[in-house]
Amino acid sequence: MKTSALSAFALAVAVAAGIQVSSRSLTVVAVDPAELKSFKPLPRIIASDSNPVTEAKVNLGRMLYYEPRLSRNQRISCNTCHDLRKYGVDGLRVSDGFKNQKGTRNAPTVYNAAGHLAQFWDGRARDVEEQAKGPVMNPVEMAMPSEQQVLAVLKSIPGYVDAFRKAFPGEDDPITVENMTLAIGAFERGLVTPSRWDRFLSGDQSALTDAEKAGFNQFIQAGCQTCHAGTYLGGQAYRKLGAATPYPDASDAGRQQVTKQEDDRMVFKVPSLRNVERTAPYFHNGKVESLNEAVKEMGKYQLGRQLREDEVDSIIAFLKTLTGNIPAEYVKRPALPKSTSGTPKPSVT
View (cartoon, rainbow, N blue to C red):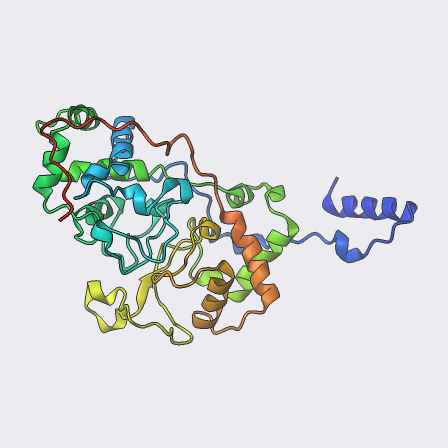
């Protein structure tokens, strides 16, 4: 039975029962298929021609992702700032690193990040493989003093010697920093979180409620899709923060720090809206704690619009459909191989 016939049938039943029903309560919200063309469902895995994903590589990468011995004090791992149980974030404005040093930007979620055009807010790493090396050597984050120290740790642990051989068969010396980043990247390429939005894009009209469909329509009407479209609803372009109205916090020059071009001042990678409901606080500085305020600020600074409260609520109803399922078994913390007497000791200095 078609929707119109169902509505007529429901109205007839209600009238026969003596129930007063407004025509508005039977309205079915429609989404223009043309507005969906710039959105695509998530892939099962975010593939890479330069880093083919294998089971052995993923298994190694999972261990390395959770490995605190890759930090100077042997207390910090990738998962410390990108907690896979918490949608890939730590919930802090900026993360705590070695000796409780503070980062300068909010740690973005690692979920679905492998599909972005680049990594970090300023795009200074081309992919998740290159990104994986940065925090390990960063003196504020994991603070390993040298690549040689990283390799000394890994080569001193028989479990890692075996795992690297399996992940990179045929190599005479498979334990390298490059292979470490390839393994972590391979694991991160499986960190995808399909949601009801993906079911809707695949043709399941019942995956979204009328209120959520209306929220998508409001999202489009406001102009949010200008930056937040595609598979990841973002992550595919750089934009100036404060395009419509100057952003009040200009302390971070953004991408200009990478390109040295004046036109890139206050330009940042557009964040993905996947799981945005669960990844507060927001923006590069982590200064906005609520999704309601984040939507309002984007309306003001990027679109030049003062969004009404009902418009904000409607957009948020749609954004919540982007909250996906954490792949619990895939991200389950593995047993890490044991240290030996030759494993370098942690340092707190």
